[in-house]
Length: 302
Image 1 (cartoon, one colour):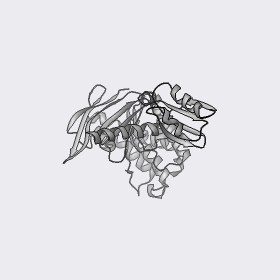
Image 2: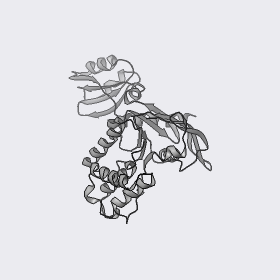
Image 3: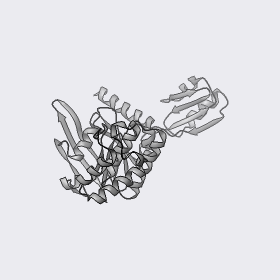
Image 4: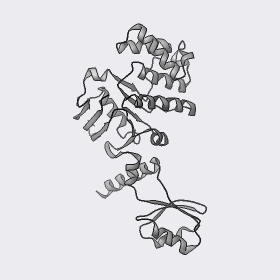
């Protein structure tokens, strides 16, 4: 399988700079989480990959060369807004979409049934899409992205509106596709899912990539955190220059401070007994807030 490369993409709408030098790579068999606030540039980036929009500058590469129309025919795309025909039967729709990608009638029918069964909607093949629940519509939308066995998956908010069972089903499908060597890129506001599923994450803010890497690599750029169980009055932290309280609940305090934490421990012990003192690993949500807030601070400073 090939890799997808985005190299310094730019896009403007009048005076609005929607993308400003966006670059990242999604390797074969990799699940890449693309996160950012509404309007940050995620959907614009995906539409440029698909050829729906043209970039003002930069290049999209597939297998090391500029992506072509034939390459894009091998992409499975799931839009945030459902792109299904509401009055068309599920089975007919999946077969039709498979045929558009070049499958024979027999192969299209077999693929439609296989993916409907995998995603748990095989009993709804004869139903109109508009008569399905939102969660089942989302499953059918994913089946539509997979029905031609694409070489690349581009999914915009695929977990939106899904119940926990459906989330597990969809997560399993994405892992299976990645195991088969397919590059997968998906956007989501559900950062716990991104953290659980993705090999690497890219954070975009106002059209610029502000962080890219594994969760471990992103954590390495963050200041160390320590969880202290003991003193309930956080005033003891004033003895540690540059330290700050991130959260407190009862006698449990999470502190951010430079160094190996010994200053934090000594200050806490000087106040009273300490029952626990451990490093605290920030979640992707914590990292996202930190990265985005740092970018905002830099922009204000400029």
